Length: 137
Ligand SMILES: Cc1cc2nc3c(=O)[nH]c(=O)nc-3n(C[C@H](O)[C@H](O)[C@H](O)COP(=O)(O)O)c2cc1C
Image 1 (tube, protein in one colour):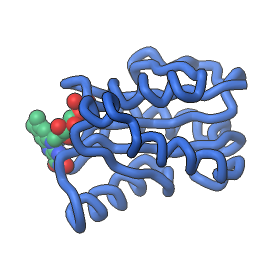
Image 2 (cartoon, helix red, strand yellow):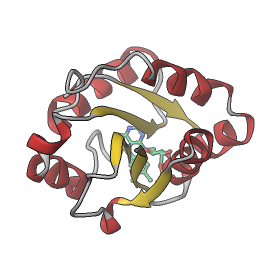
Image 3 (cartoon, protein in one colour):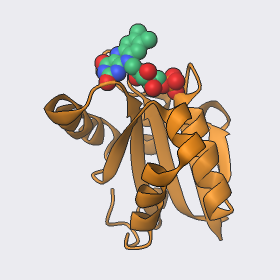
Image 4 (cartoon, protein in one colour):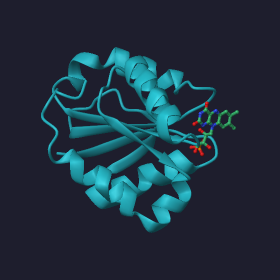
């Protein structure tokens, strides 16, 4: 069983973070456009979306909706790649959580730079250990 990181990225930040997480967890990073129909080989699924005018990836929202019952049997988390910080970022996170149906996540600013250093993403990965099956979504 392994980790799948599904990302929606335009300028590469979200993708860089996804690839970093996949490398660290011995998992796989995949564009949401190529998301698999069969999730049986993964026990953890991480969704990473860029934020555009406050909103997250529509294909990602759709995919989660279509696979909700299966995702309830897995560890699930999300991250956003955005430019806001502080209160604005927290509000954006809450809104993203509601629209994705996943209620535990984090945000990263300047994803490509973070992936080069890694420390902040490592903290997110460390938290994945404490996630229970189905309690993230
Ligand atoms: C047209 C546009 C709209 C954006 N809207 C937001 C936004 O509402 N909130 C935010 O925090 N960042 C916003 N951003 C910043 C991006 O979310 C941020 O640069 C992110 O890292 C991009 O991810 P990507 O490189 O994976 O595409 C916007 C960027 C663009 C180009």
